[in-house]
Image (cartoon, helix red, strand yellow):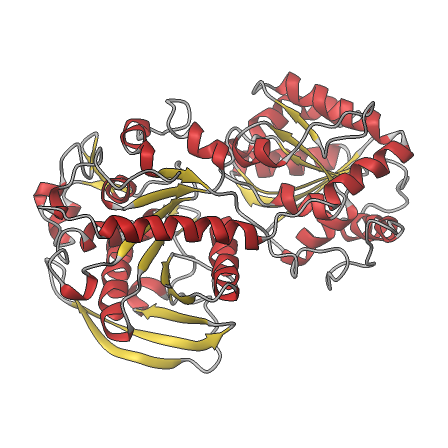
Length: 501
């Protein structure tokens, strides 16, 4: 089967979050199972290509004001995957992917509309896939355009579309006036298609026109059909419930594994955990915490600083948590209020709370290896990857029971020796503090704690299993294309292909 991925970021070429990790790892897992894989990405300023070669020198993209002309280059075929990059410097040769500290780029609608049209046009030349697998709102126009403008194009007659929601909180909302500029017809601006409280919603368009919809954990696929987590689109998803499924993200154990991690001070494995003490000392030194009592538990955080990630709860309890017998190492950036909170606390408790306001891949690995616990108290978390990394490193997760966090972490029971971490349910500072204190108490029993560590390290969340589940979705989506439709472009979201068994 030929699957074409379309996404706004993917490692090792571009990254702001977990989406890039998925787009980097899932294609490799599918290629290893014998499938033909193409990956389409924008060519950003940060995209470093070795031996880039032109594939298409000019693609004409119509806009209402004027045509724009982009090109497509390839970086070759690696691990059975062909990567293609849409190159249009006026849109993509910028400081960041989506915006600056001031806010999103004001022309993001045009940027990713051009990207979506270029992917479709390029695929006509280099080879139309069996399935387009699109990710998040930046590629959401691909299923919309395929089922409208290209609905009669024989090149795409049997091409299916699968759309993955990585985070419902980001939908691609723009003023209605953007439609004419993007050369999109006004009949898309209806409640059953792309209209959303007077605005155009790119994500909603993909939910209406894709053959199948996936999310990055089973729990999250259920949560987003509720008012609390649906961000206003829960009704659309409930109407399409038969075609919505959750597939848990995997991780790449070639990259995240304490047995072969090149970024950590000492390697270790479940049968010999001695290296973790070396990594703990190295982590504390990296954060400038000298002469610390290494018997104190270290809690690690690697995150975007945002309320979604539970930092409002951390703010509620931070003064009390700082007085517990523990050390906190924090890596991340984001909301200025939270950045300032951690910097203030570091000045107040310099030997107990350390922070680096940045994203640093090497330090992220050091935290996973050197910390004793990893904190993720998210308000919502579609899948989460760090808690899975932490399991592999024997770094016990403390999480809120939501989305992928709930799905991947089993509560520790010292009486039975079963479980992999600690989790709480009520979204409150008090619940978080009680759970952290329970973890700190459990840490005092070294023998029991080692059982808990090894429980997590034995778990397998590799991509191979998740890739097989995606293949089932692709096959169902292809079957759906064989069902005759009298007018595909007007198909309401309540209709669709048969459910996944």
